[in-house]
Image (cartoon, rainbow, N blue to C red):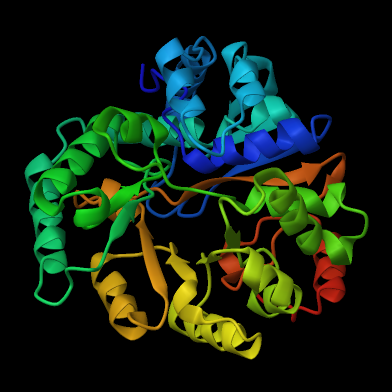
Length: 398
């Protein structure tokens, strides 16, 4: 089996799931899969592996949290005991997932059911699809090439003057494979050091954080703010509602706000003085990161908040060279964090699968994000997208 522990996922799945348990236990949602590079010379043709994928998902649904895993989660300051008690009886149910082959060679994956019981599917299902694909198409993976590329990244990070630059692993969902993911992390720990004195700040993967003694990292993802479009009192106030409900749950902890569900301009309109002071910082995940950073710093200054007390997290398709560029532009002006995903865990010389699973409906109504990178939008209801743009005063992007 590829997934052997329910902790083999990103931390923000648990932090969001706790909010769902306490604030939105009755919400019903639907997620859909998309491969962005499907159709190019057969790249992303997953239909031949559909039975293998189904079998791996069946194995995933047989898992339950072990006592040691529950104890690890309970030790996190922001995880509440009743949530851990719930996880103690939790199982993923295969009935909420359908995987089917399409004539085009692609696959269709739909996850539909109670949010509380489906939220943990996304990351392990994506990891399963990746590993099934690559173990079938690259039966003898070029680990030597992967190690050489990783070595180059490490040497770049060890350049003089970059000692304060810290990176984090955000690569679970698009990793080449579980074993390679662990090797990458162990190599980074050994070569860069971890924690306060090292350059590896931590990992989003809870299992490897526990196993390797790393700091688990994560707060909220797009699905949380998207769901608030259906759960809040008024669509225009859904972003504010999402931030307020997050603050109600965590009381100032886990204070990194995601900025690109409605685009940067709409985010800044809603991220007023109250939120500037309440949240520890913001995360970038689409659009030009340099422009985004400058706008965030200007916004803090305009709201009489010292940017040096706030953290900017960059996590959109980062490579090590791009990370170094961003670090050099913003160091000393604010606190910085960098989450590198695919470029860390799936860089062996093969084109990675650009796959996502996104929430598309909540409580029977469409939900979507209006990304500053148009290709990241995922909604098949054009009328709803047009309405969303109008409500948030976002120009139509193609």
